[in-house]
Length: 147
Image 1: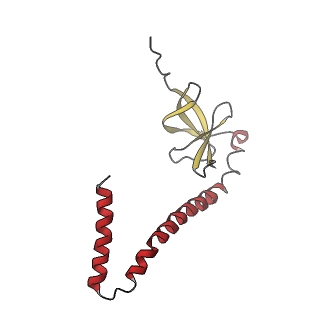
Image 2: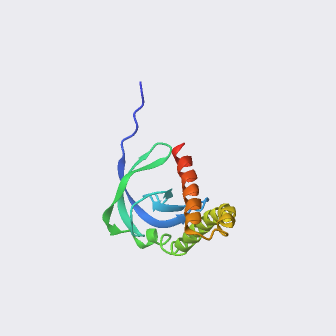
Image 3: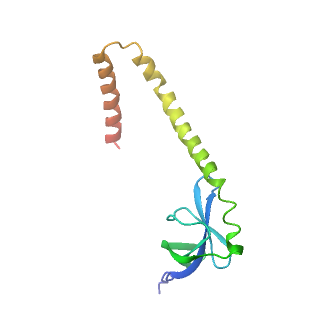
């Protein structure tokens, strides 16, 4: 006999705002009816401190199904208190972490382009520059096509 997955149940949760995961990723906090903070990597655009109807299953882990729907109310002051003040500084931190990752990728690309730029520097004619560009693009294109 096979065991079927539990059916999702509708619960009233409060959106708690942004959090920063251990790896620097953006996480979205939700407070369940028992006040436990649960973190999810994806969610829609929600208002901090507002209540939403969320379809969930609880079978050792909590799984959110679909997109939460606005329940038409804000949580009481006691429930909303931990949500707001912790959120404002998180967005700048997330943006700083994203900028650092982006800069690291650019630095790696700049390092890889260094020898190519040295080869390109002495080229004085458009034909020579075009030939080098075509050669590089051809190599990139053939690498992408072979995967």
